[in-house]
Image 1 (cartoon, one colour):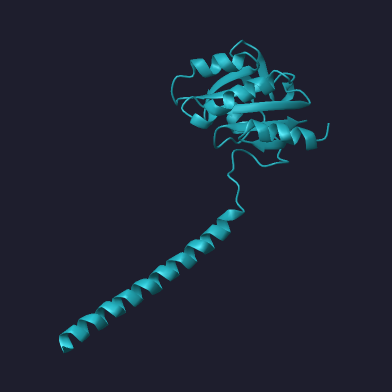
Image 2: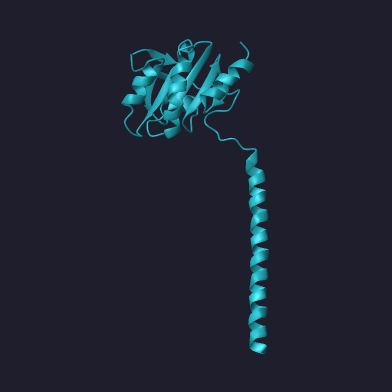
Length: 174
């Protein structure tokens, strides 16, 4: 009988230890969740940042640089191997058709970019470059899709979803 009691006691101690460790892990996970809740994913330079200098040529031979952007420019950065980019593409093209001189940057090296370029050329000046090229460096792009509005060389909106960029039109100063 004492052997059975010892086995039950050891099982109870192990169960209690397991419960204490599980509760400690849940507490740490909640703490991490609280810390991460306020963080937004960063796609490029932050709002209010000035874009860097760059020089590039569009796929149609149009020279582009930071000074050649209109007073209020919209720029989309896409990558061929990026599924969210392909989901945002129809909305971005439709939105870009309503704008003056929108620019799209297609990052090369992630797959076949011909279809992406063809769709974007319907409405935008398209620049092909690798990540770390002149335009993506000037915009400090670290993720795709990145959709930016630049006014007088200052980033006034950064989004990854076209509907959010459109919504910021309503609150952005004209």
